[in-house]
Image (cartoon, rainbow, N blue to C red; front, side):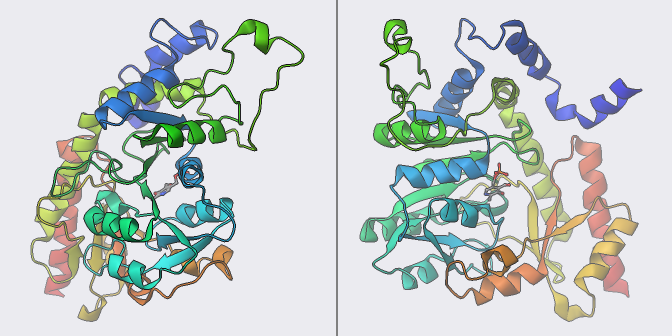
Length: 393
Ligand SMILES: Cc1ncc(COP(=O)(O)O)c(C=O)c1O
């Protein structure tokens, strides 16, 4: 009975996950011939993104903090962030001791409005954090032009974005100084909780690995190994730490699951894209719901399917959601509060975001983690049925 239930709920973890977990335990957390699972996951992730370095961490919030540290972001600095999206972006800026500056959203793509970012630049602005919300990349050409002009550090938050690309075919997370991903359970790839950063810059990679690796001075860009020379390491005079730091390391058990997930990443990501496309088709040109606009040439990775609900047609947001669920839909999530509106951020940061606040009230997020065509068809048909229902009433 238990096995049946877990097989059902754990369908994303039925390849090498258990085998690798077993290898970790059997090895007593030692490294196998191909290195530790953290090393293998990092290497494969860096290769897939054509980046020199990848560094695992215990969450996608930790990786954002590491990414800001790579750019020396500190107290007194300002960091431009969007407000459509989880508060973790804001938290990471606060963790760095810096001030979040809230940037408004594009009403069609729901992503950071780079023109508004430009208006909010001050002498204190040191970094910008484009967040590829719902799995669609921001306009990185505009972000990088702004960053070049004002010498800003760029951390791409790809927590929701895996293997998406822009009109030039550039992969998410490979354009800014640092790309940051989350392996939290709802994400394209999951280790339960976890994250990873990627960069081409050796100095930044070293800084991030040390910062998340409790400041061991032996840590290098490409390796977290701290016991380089036994005779030095076991000597009472040996000094280990050269910076104040955090323990953001990803446990080996999680890395084992992560490697198995990355091995089948294309399949996991394609499932989400297929669901996103099915919802888009189900909506067609319906004026009640307008999908997130995908610019020409961009590939969306559909962490979730985001659409803007039109509240001016006599149907309330809540009423639409209830009907969708009554027809068997598996839920519609509202967008998170605009970050600046979360009680925790009261008095923290500055910047008006009227477009984002209006969008937030009307956005709908549909699930894209269906396991097969039957499940996808079911959700898409329920969405069509819900739209038809309100058209007729
Ligand atoms: C856009 C975005 N940034 C950051 C995070 C933080 O990731 P984590 O939950 O792994 O800390 C998340 C996910 O939760 C996210 O969706």
